Amino acid sequence: MDIAFIIGVVAAFGALYAMITMEGASLSALFLPAPMILVLGSTIGVGIASHTLRDAIAAFGSLGRMVRGPRSTPAAVIPVLVGYAEKARTDGLLRLEEELGTAPDDYTRRAVQALADGVDAEDLRTLMLDEIDSESARNRVSAKFFASLGGYAPTIGIVGTVVSLTHVLENLSKPDELGHMIAAAFVATLWGLLSANFIWNPIAGRLNRMATLEQERMTLVCEGILAIQAGSPPRLLEERLLAMTTSAPAKKKPPRADAAPAVEDAA
Image (cartoon, rainbow, N blue to C red):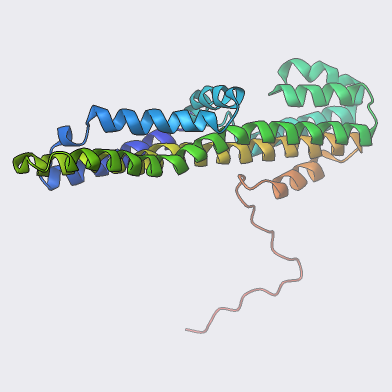
């Protein structure tokens, strides 16, 4: 489980709480039900209105996966693919069917099954790339949904402030209450900015990052399976896949055989 999102959000709200405490303000002055209901409720409402209901359900359904983080890094699939290459090299492609039960995910399982079934290389590439495109599009729909909430929230906060200030102007005859009412009016703007930058945009950014990692992982599987079908040696396959991934540590290049030894300076 990757807890970066939890750490980040807690740190952000913790910094806000520290500021409020240091300035001697009251938390109760910020947690007013009316502006919070308007901003949060209306933001979610217009977000749903700007997408399909299926998109909204999928977006909220992705929150659990977003908090947990990616199942594994793209580099984690490389040893699995290298193992498939070694087995195919010694026992043949047909014997890869024995590895279906231990495949790390459904995408890899389907690819190995197609490989063992002898699907043509071009047909297999087309099938796998189409599935990558479809999965990537589905993953990014949720990110776009929360990004739209981050765009709507500040404006809706301003709407709430305008509504509250209208109420203030209706009560100019009560000067003793104007300060409190004006302060409360700006709470809606605060929650619009706060929810956008502390909640919705971080969620969208994390979902985008997870979609990128998943696309990279699936691309590694695609290229690995096609290389195995072409008879690539396991060692060469590993080097190629490591060069493709951004999540694996860079390997140090071995020194050149013809490189001259370093000459130490004379003391």
